[in-house]
Image (cartoon, rainbow, N blue to C red):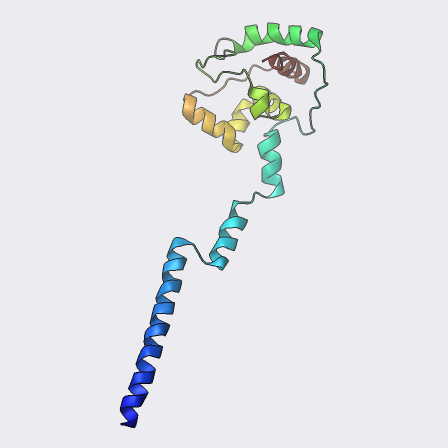
Amino acid sequence: MKTMKRLYFIFPLVFLMACQSNNKKSDKSTGDTKANKKQVDSSEIMHNDELYKAKTGVGPIKDEVVLDDQIDEAMADKGKKLFNNECASCHRIQDESVGPALGGVLGERSPQWVMNMILNPREMVEKDVQAQSMKAEYETQMVDTHLSEEEARSIVEYLRNY
């Protein structure tokens, strides 16, 4: 009789423990445990150097490019001429072409990143995830036009109009 009482007590206990253990396994497989959530959250956080690269790209422009409140019209005019001579064969302002449309690019990318893409397209595609994604989408490598930093800055000023 004592054996039966023990079985009646032990069987439900073992059953509950098995169910609880099974629930933990299913939570782990779906990523619902607190430990797994912490691991996922921390893996999604970029390190400071990755955030820096995402903002600036890879190239000679390391410091933040500060844009004045007002567009410098003389610089923008120079940028328009350079854009038409060096960029317009692959880029349009509003429509995609061989490369992406550049209207609104400064709303999506920092001026530093745009300038580094102009000045250093090969290394940008090798080391910058955003540039790699664009190359995959447009299936074309941007050519190096050998512009100066001042000329690239003029193109950025021109693009501020769009």
